[in-house]
Length: 474
Image (cartoon, rainbow, N blue to C red; front, side, top):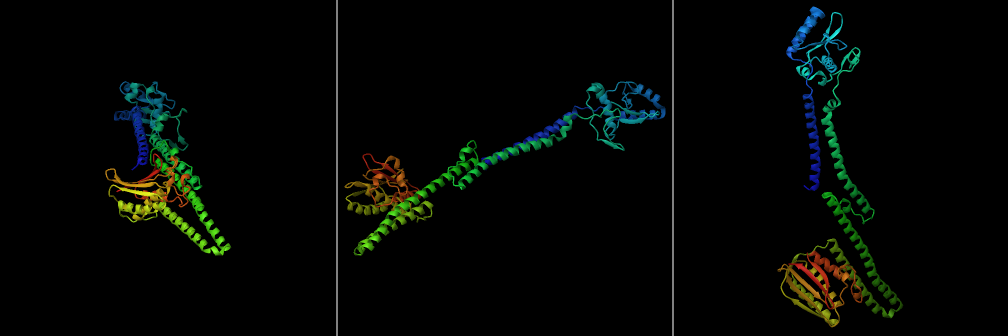
């Protein structure tokens, strides 16, 4: 599991925590609001007994008998009897919110039993109720109104107002909102974090999509890694890998274009000479043998060029399947030195071979022979006449690698071109006089050495000449 997984996990966990805290907080606020709203209407058994007694007194004794009853119990546990105008039968002052709470409670008798609706003998509608001791102690004006009951329907439709035209008691806005707070918190929290996660993922994906479209249209100068610089996750790594891929693709396409140009240039000269030889044979039949020799040399040169191109192409594409075996470097170098010495003597040059240890590596003997031969033959061609090419073989790094160094006494290579000479068809100005060759030998040698896990580099020698250093793992 990578960094991107943990970021998504953290975002999701945070959203769940916020939603949970919102739900818990809403429930706590609801309970706290209930605790701060003490009941106003007493529904205890003693209160119900008094209400029953008052109802019976009004029914059988009338209003005067009820007034005497209310006066007798007013000091112990007062009862209130109010008419439609909220006037008390004994002339006592009744707080508006208490009267509103009593009327609201009378509409839900299953909740508040200590409220009675009575009809006096003269036809007046009366409301009988008993306030709670808490309401009596704190004062009626300080007590919040009771919850609004569900609307009751009669023949005239919903009744939400009292008989005096005033609306019945309603809870404050914050109380009405509390039941929906958990749902709102969960929805808002999830929405916010969903938007953040969507934005976090969609932004780099849009960058990648536009970059892919640019590459598909042939634009290889596009870069995505810089646009994802603040990030540090798998998407940022993907952007950097994309840039590396595009850069590698650009180099390959540039190399193909350059290779196609160089191949065309290299083939043009022998083809021109072939056409010239054919034309000369037609004009001078007596020189047909010389012309055929010329055609044969040009065809051999073209065949060699095509063979080297095929080898280079297979090495670059990784399609060449080498034969892995134990290769003795001292034996291989001795064989190459013997052939190179014969060629050097023909051009008034010498080759000196110095081997200071036996070394065996795993690899393809034919490929290694071809790579080392290209390096040695190139040194023999570049070294000055009547000079010696020295080839040294030694073990380095506690016997973990073998070092093969080839020193010539030629013109050397400009410092800025020491790495360029390993590119196909490249020949520096100092070596342009050597028309025998196509500039593929060092390119093939480098790819063979790399395929065997080694390294090759060119170093200018002090006093003139060039050293080709090859390192191969044992």
